[in-house]
Length: 95
Image (cartoon, rainbow, N blue to C red; front, side, top):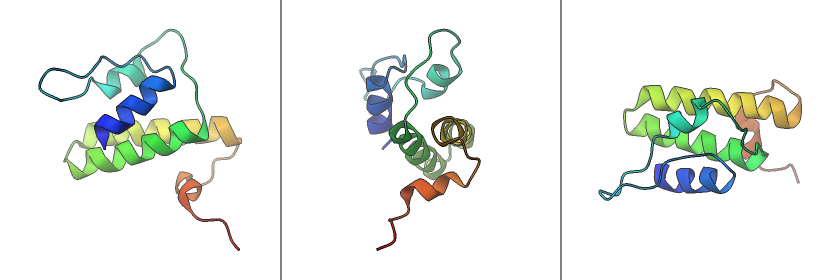
């Protein structure tokens, strides 16, 4: 999941180092913290960051999980203008 999230974020302009020869991905945290040109922030990026946070948490990488979650919350505020619970983006629409 982390590798897929990294690929998606790279497609949205995040400058993430390419996948290494051992199959591990570049440092997502480095890409999020890097000053300079901004990357595209969309609701899709927010969702991917949330999934990446869950994957990092499952792997025991709490620092990376917290960074992804914090960035997802910030992105949610940017894209929606609200400070609501970011998990609302994954809920199905009422029918």
